[in-house]
Length: 397
Image 1 (cartoon, rainbow, N blue to C red):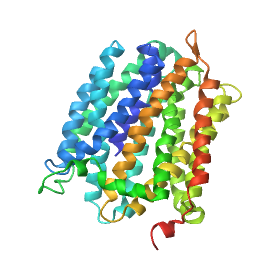
Image 2: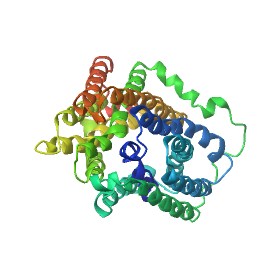
Image 3: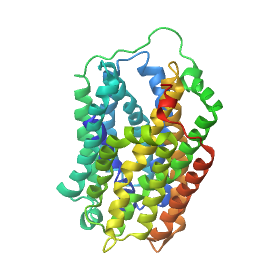
Image 4: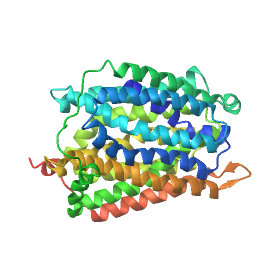
């Protein structure tokens, strides 16, 4: 888990800054680059359904993919133009995104009680993401103005290529995790998670499904623009400070069960949505001098944004899915959020950024108002149309 998320966090957070400084990419080109994550998320269930679930041990497939990934990451570091960079990145993310499911599958298969033990393993992924950001900012200072101007962020891809090679080799030492099902023909209905669509007949789940897609549109603004925003306004050690979001993610995870039980699903989800609107308002108003605290609070709100909406949403989905469709339901929500929602969001973020740049300088005050207003609209829609459910009711206890 540590290596898996170190690889992702080691280049993904600073990608926007890298594209602007090294490849002189436009907002639309940055949107294309970030949307490779969404295409990877859309392909991931097909990848898992066709290969990992039926033909190849998960740990072997994980090893092969990361070894190939290390080569692609190294080539990304050497790409001189966006036209050569984008196809490599697209290929890498189509390979990488399915590995998120593979590491989970390996972990779950080796645990007697996943509900009790998985969080203790998964937290190492968050720590990997944090360490990657701290290394970039404080150990190497690749995101400092001087190093950024010299093209040092290119080193993040080589750093992650080395870690990916280590991960690839290490994967072959993991416990054997053979395919769960070797018999029977695989159907398109199964691969595309179509069985989970029946959940959309439930009014509350339909409302949650639509809100999940819509709230990922402002979420894409954060992933695509936050690091570039912080470095452009000269926030020191921007990438390291962004790890506050992952630190808060760990902290708020501890109080999430209490909130679900005491507040119910609706209020918990609404708190997560409200946090998105608040963080973007803080980004719009803050600066790198006397109001830098607004930026730090906005970053730290990531724990509320992610845990209270996405994690509680996964719990809600699992409870609604029933025994036979849990995997399909989670796959459907993943495709809706990281796939469709963020694919739209990255495109919108690129358009907004290009519309508010003058002489190479972004009007970040206006840019951040767009996702703040949109998140507030989604909040209002959800508050009106989603009926509250206590967790005990959702779980049928």
